[in-house]
Amino acid sequence: MLSTPVITRFAPSPTGQLHVGSARTALFSWLYARHHGGQFLLRIEDTDEQRSETQFSESIFKDLDWLGLNADQAPVYQSQRQDIYQQHFGKLKKKAATYHKDGAWYVNVAKGLNALKQLKVLDAQGYVVVNDLIHGAVKFPPDELEDFVIIRADGTPVHHLALVIDDAETGVTHVIRGDDHLSNVPRQNILHALLGLPIPQYAHLPLILGPDRTRLSKRHGATGLDEFRAQGILPEALINYLARLGWGFGDQEIFSLTELIEKFSIEKVNKTAAVFDYKKLQWINKQYMKRMETMSMAQHLQKLSGEDFSTHQTAIELLMAKCSQPEDLLSALKYFTSDAYPTETEARDQYLSDPEVAHHIETLKEMLQKIDAFTLENLEGTVRGLAREMDLKAADLIHPLRVILTGRAVSPGIFELMHVLGKETVLRRLERWLTQVQTLG
Ligand code: GLU
Image 1 (cartoon, rainbow, N blue to C red):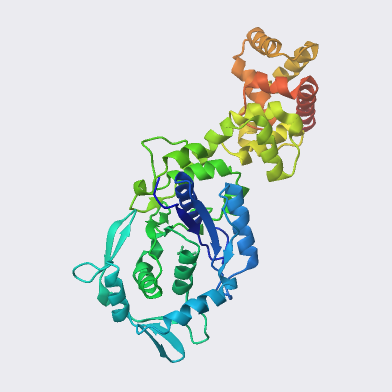
Image 2: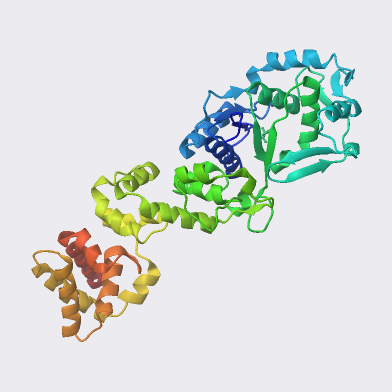
């Protein structure tokens, strides 16, 4: 545990849907706070009135809620804090390091750096040194900095000024955010020095790239949390995947939330960009799906599709062993819930085109009619027995049977399937197919 209580924050700009990269930033900030028994805050950076929209802050809250990344205090909105920025600016404009030009207020960087020197943030060469928890000491040459605006001609504060004030006022000790903000630190530190505010610890997270090593974008696949949700990715699986994206604990892949909180350390986050691997996410999702009780899976599917599957627990259980994604499960459930399921053309051509098949199925149907209980033993005995009698391989009956009963070449085991469908449904479907063949033939 650190001596002062840790306070982290997530500070999204509400200008779009929550991007999966930002979700990871939120997760790492949240985990860091939870690991240290600290607090996690939320700040909506909505000062850009043109681009900020309430609908986006709402959807960001919804996504964080879905992931379970709860904040410890009510969110702070920058748009409601203009008075506070003006108060701080009142002090700032008296400093020799600021000046007024063309209606705007600027910081004189040379003087600002002087203030930083006293805080021991400059090295012997005068470089600004940022001791980042992930990147180590990162140095910025002073001559790359130019005087910069802090208050625009219309009187509004720039983003750097607002966030430096907000972090300090809300007691933020650790700023965990994307790499793209690293180069802003020298200017932000100058503002800390001039305002007499403490400099927080920094941890800048490397970017997330697509498989082609360019910044992850829509071109690569889903990026918004709403898209992952629509694909049926479980929040626990996404959390697990995002935690492992750029962070690791040996070669362990699956972590419960409690384990993540216990094991997470920001120092172990990789310095280099992480590549988003959709297949890996699917694999992790599959692990979580396997673990889910069928009941909660039924609820999950109901949320996705609006259909009630509570009477199809056994079918779900059977399919969960076969289907890696909820979407596949939903589509396979069709042949359990109704007779109106599609038939794959390839499967039909491969297994139902032989004229002999109708004869086999007709005979099988008659035998199945005679079975009282559709138990696994009875079903297996009947099908295998008939195959022997007719001098066929069991597969010669099972493949056509499967295509007729499910429309597919792949399904759960045929006897379990028939058992779950039940006698009435199985016979009805066989009968329907036989009628179709006769009509066509
Ligand atoms: N609002 C900024 C962003 O969305 C975050 C700034 C920060 O974390 O310091 O990129």
